[in-house]
Length: 432
View: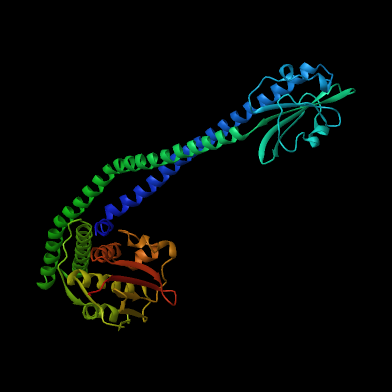
C-alpha cells in the first residue's frame, strides 16, 4: 500500500525515477571501478607468480650450463653431493646428450614423460625453449637450454618447476580477491543507496513545497475566478453592456469557466498527490456508475455527432469513492471525444478480469505512439502542437486519472486500439 501511495504522488514518482537512475548509474560506475581494480590486481598477482617461477627455472638452468662449461659430465662422475643444483624442492635439472638421453639427474626426479625430447630442436640461443607441459597429470614449467656453441652442440640442460604449489596459490589468490570484490560491491551498493537517498532529500522537499504552493495558489484563485464569472453573468442577464460588448462579456464568461476548470484540475492534482488522501469508499456497481457518468457527457458527444457506446461484459462491483471514479470516467470519455474524429464512436467497456474490475475507453482517433504512452500521464503533457490547439484542457486530466486509479489500488495504461486509435484500460480490485 505504501508503494501505491508513493506512486500516486507526482513528486514521489519523479523523485523515485530520478533516484533509481542516479543509483543505478552511480553503482554501475563504482562496480566497474571495483571490478576493474579486482581484475587488474588478479592479473598483476598472477603475472608476479609466473615471473617468479620463470626466474627460478631460468636461474637453475643457467647455473647448470655455466657449471658445465660447454662439456657434458661423464655419467659415472656424477656424485649426488657435488652435482645437486641449488634451488627449491619444486625445481629439478636434467643434463641431456644431443640425442636427449639423460646424462645427469641430481634431483632424482621421477615424472613420467621426462625428458621432453620435443623441446630440444627448439632450444636455441640463450633464451632456449620455455613451455608449460603436463607430466603424469602434474603441470610443469620447463626450460630447455643448449650446452655448447652453435657449431659445437654437446647437449642440453632441461630445468623444470613443478607448478602444484603455484597453482594452489594462484587459486587461493583469485578466490580471496573475488571474495573481497563481492564484499566491496555489497558495500558500494549500500553506500551508494545511502548517498543517493541523502542527495535526493532537497529534491523531495522542493517538490513537496511546489505541491503546497499549487494547492494554496489554486484555493486563492478559485474565489476571484468565481467572482469574475458571476459579475460577467450579471452584466449579461441585466443587459448592462452595449451590443458591441456582448461578445466580450461572453468571452469573459468562457475564459472564467476555463480558469475555473484549470483551478479545479490543479486542486485535484495536488490533493490526489498528497500522501494523506482520504477516499470515501462504498460498494459500487461499476457499470451503473459508468452509465451515469456517460449521460453527463452525452451533450458534448452530440455536439460532435458522436456516439458513446457502453458495453457491460460482466458484473463488476468494487469498493471505491463515487465522486472520484465519476471524475475518472468523465476524464477518459472527454479525452476520447476530444481526440476522435467527428461522427465516430467511443466505446466504453466494463468487465470482470479475474480478481479485478476492468474499465476500458476506446476511440478511433490518431492513437498514441508507443514511446508516448507513459509520458501522457505526466502533468501538462501534450503530444504535439495540433493536440494543443484542438483541446481546451491544460494537460492535467490524465495525470489526475492516474492519481485516482492508483489511490484505489489499481492501474491505468494506454494501448493501441484495434484500428489504430487509443485505448485506455483501468483495472481496480473487485469486491470479493
